[in-house]
Amino acid sequence: MRNRTPQRPQLDVERAKSRFALSHIVGRHVKLRKAGHEYVGLCPFHDENTPSFRVNDAKGLFHCFGCGAGGDVIDFLTHVEGLNFVEAVRALLDEDGLPEVAQRDRAAAERREREDRAAAILAAQAEWHGSRTINGTPAQLYLAGRGIVGEMPSTVRFGRVPLWRNKKTGANGRLCPALLLGAQDRAGKIVGVQHVFLTEDGQKAPMTNPKLSLGQVRGCAVRLAPPARRIILIEGPEDGLTMRMRRPRVPVWITLGTGMMPYVELPPEVEHVTLAGDNNEPGRAAVAKAKEEYERQGRTVDTDFPPPAFEDWNDELRGIEKV
Image (tube, rainbow, N blue to C red; front, side):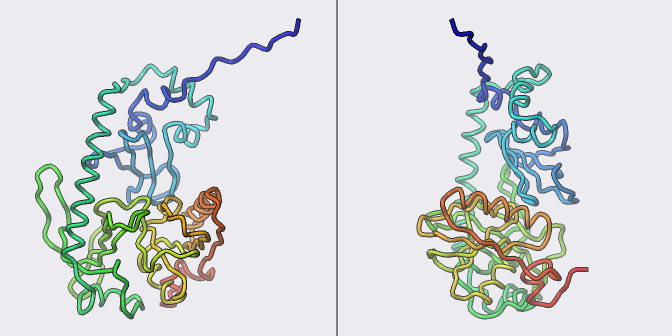
């Protein structure tokens, strides 16, 4: 009779993922603060001074908008604690020091998030409909100061928009001039807006972070031209508009964040993607991750970076070399 090797007990991966609020696990390693239905903190995967790391308990996912790191609780444990997949699952199943999340509470959180996302998209669309062309505005002055001139595509506009919004009370901050960029989903519908807040004379507003998004941005792109067989994906608005001047025959799409580059939901007609990255560690990491993802989807991919002396494409346009 043939000897049978005892089988290892099957691990309940889904239970391991859903037992605890992700913020409780992450909170052991990262100081988090509440921001709406999410938590924010300094990313544990790269050095930063401004928090770009977000934790979403309803989805059970984390994401860094700076370096592009992201995933679920198992991904977090494997990267932060050095566990392999099986060890991370077992650690979660054996954990007894944290309160478990009831299924009804998780479902309620997911429902609230869907409702909030839908409301944010409607607010972004209403704001977009109230915008205008950049001609004769601080946005035109700002772009000209960055060496960007000429007629703008329909996804680049100007508006006077609130500096902040309070979701609970409905109160808004004072109106501020802003360059507006319309983020389109896979079907080409504008579902989000990124603001670049400005002064009246066309400078970036003197604030910690003059860029703020409303609505849905992840998975979307600011299309500076319609879809084609080949497109260029690039991180920021200034770089994207610079690239549009350099390569006017190839559609340029802006991902609105280095960490967003791997997640754009491309329509089926896009067969070839050129990833135009920044000359820094987060930029190259995002390009590498995006290349892997789009090749997995069956698309051909190539990469492009500015000359070594320059941090990004707009710096090259203006002749501003790295210090």
